[in-house]
Amino acid sequence: MPNLRKPQASKYSPATRERAVRLVLEQGENYRHEFQAIRAIAGQFGMHPNTLKSWVRMARVEAGELPASPDTRDLEIAELKRENAELAQTVEILKRATTFFARECDPLPPMSAGSSSNTEPTSESHRSVES
Image (cartoon, rainbow, N blue to C red):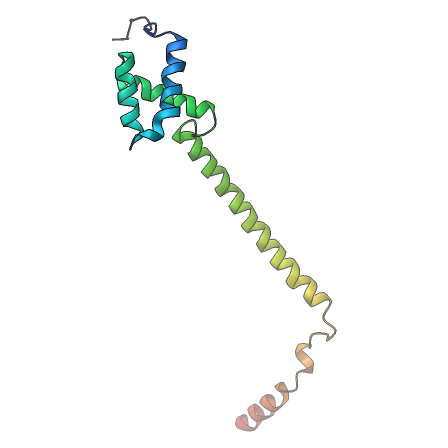
């Protein structure tokens, strides 16, 4: 069954919200844990601590102190993995190019198979065994 309830209007004015969040951000360091500050300040305003906690989180996201959501972090990690794979592929291409150009610039030409000096004794010893 779909939820037919209308969204509930906030009990608290935007000014109250801003003031409560500002108090947590300013006075949070006076507490051992941030949630202790949230609990104390929420009590002063007569609101549930989780309400104030979510407002503080949204304020930190808007200020750029926290990522918007874990999904944002996952997207960033996926992008970095793609970039890492691309860089690894680039490194492999550069290694191959270095090998290619090193061979091209080698002053000693590669020896051909027919001019090898150690093929003749092997073939002679092979003939002597067959005879």
